[in-house]
Image 1: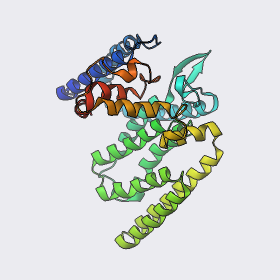
Image 2: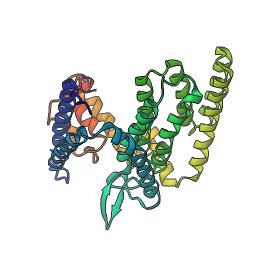
Image 3: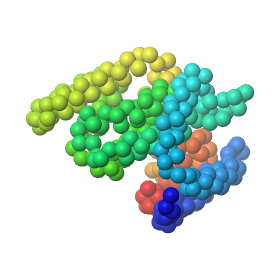
Length: 323
């Protein structure tokens, strides 16, 4: 196998992001009240070292071996996601979800994280085997199934935040390989239908609107029919899944869309995160100077909500540079 060159710009970018993330995690643990996350940055540093070593090993692995192993990794990820739904547990503020697998009372990992990597590999394997990018919605169907399976399984935990990541992966990869923008727009419309399905009135208005647009635009008959059926089917599935959720699961999803309905419980983190982001202003308060995290208004500030810590301390310009 011919040696592969390293992209120095990519390595520098990843290194800078890792360093900034580590600094932000350290800042998140520096509060005015005792917390269990004060030293969590040290654990993250260990993971960075381990990931660097793993990356060096993977770099030496033949791409053919990765291609061969991808279906097995993807299948394992799907099986673990199913097990998570059956015997999984929550953690911390996510106690109402089933997103972790535990053994003997000890949490051993989130299968959704493995599923993200496995989905990217499976998408790459599928699309690399094509002579040209998909040009029709029918040709996009296999890619949608590859992403749709983990998307639904993670959404049922329910972990809407992680589930949305899979949709982002799909559109990013399809855009990267050169799928026409027209198809990406058509493909994205059922996603909107899914989000609006929590309100029957909003979903009904959306279906009428998409019907009028398809009639006015007069796309290919098959594409138009697939898009319309996809919107109706996605909304219908969402409604049925909604009815099958336990009350606490429904409450978590509703709080994700509108945290004001439960401001002192499931909506607390989102509301306080918005306060922190807004208080950062344009330039921020400075590293280690955030008040929302210092006073422990953000009990989950070391998780996905760490963005609010970054925004409060580095401000709008800081997060724009990071993104």
